[in-house]
Structure formats: structure tokens, C-alpha cells
Length: 230
Image 1: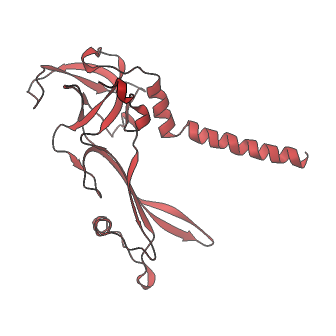
Image 2: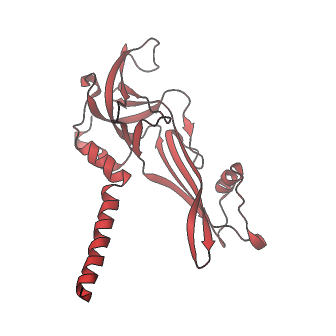
Image 3: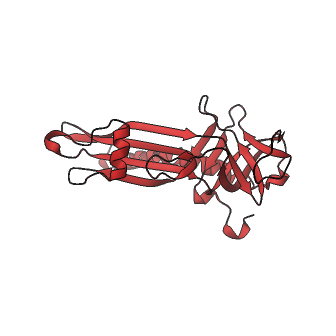
């Protein structure tokens, strides 16, 4: 096999590998699935139909509080990693990986759906935009907020000779009042108890069914263009 052919095969392998990573990434998968569905108005939702809804996320009970930013939310994902050296190379090791979600409303022009996500078994598929980051390093002290969070998880911030450890944090949330896109099977329910600021006697719920999970994302590409929003 000649050298040009070997080089071409190596390049082709790299391109195919990169494409597969992109094609099967959580972001690409969920945006691709949502793109196949039309936007639905809540008042027109049909029972037992897999439907896509865009609207504002609202908490049902007390909202969650994002660990670092302290923002009110209905869903958050956070990760703390530390830099680990092994001989001549180094890598980021995840030491905390936390995902917390609660039942929540999605509101659209005064009407609401209720979303019932569960973690065990996990009945939803999500992609959240990472909108909170911070880090510390040898010559970079952790912020007071980051240090407090690290202390909460009993993570030491200093190593040998008092130098700061290389640590980083990422946070992604569905904030209360944030515009998001969801999809799932619709099931209309009668309300046994009144819901604050909601005057209807029934409400549509969004659930999973079999292999068809609830889809949740706050990515802008999943939103309806502004001129077509309801």
C-alpha cells in the first residue's frame, strides 16, 4: 500500500470518526428528533399523541436552587472535575456529577402542560446549554462561591506546598421563566385541586411511553423563530 493511500485512509478515518461523534452527540440527537415534529398549541394537544411544545418553564412547588449560581430552576446539571497527572500526560477526572430535576409546568399564552420526568428509571432525554463555568488553578484562587461549594462536597482546594489544585466547574439549568422546548406523549387530566394562576379544570401532562422518552432542551435552535411564537 502506497504512502498517499495510507495517508488518505487515515484522514478518512478521522473524518468519519468526527462525523459519528457529532451525529450521535446528545445535542444533535435531540435537535434532530425535535426538528421532525411540528410545534403544537397546548389547547390543541391530542391525547396519546407524541407532541412538541415550546413555552416558559415554571416551578410547581418550591424551585430547585442551582448549586453555584443560586438561580431558581426546575432542572440542573453540574460537574466538578480536577486535573490529574499521570507521568507525562494529564487529564480531567470527574469527581462530582450531579443531575437534579423535578416535575414542572410549561406555560404558553396562559395555558400549561405539566411534565413528569423521572430519574429511576430515567424517562427523559435532555440537552441543556452550559451557562455557568468557573475554575481554579495554581495561580488562580477559587471564587468565594466556588470554594464554599467545594467545601460542601469535602473537596480540598490546595495541594502540596499550599498551591491551588486545578479544579473546574460547569453548570447547566432550566431556569424558572426560561423559554424551552419539550416533547412527549400527551395525557389530559382532570385537576382535583386548583392550581394558582391557572383557571382551567383540566391540564395536559407530558409523559414517556416505552422507548419514547420525554425530550427537554433549552437550546435556542429548538425554539420557534421569534416572529412565529405564541
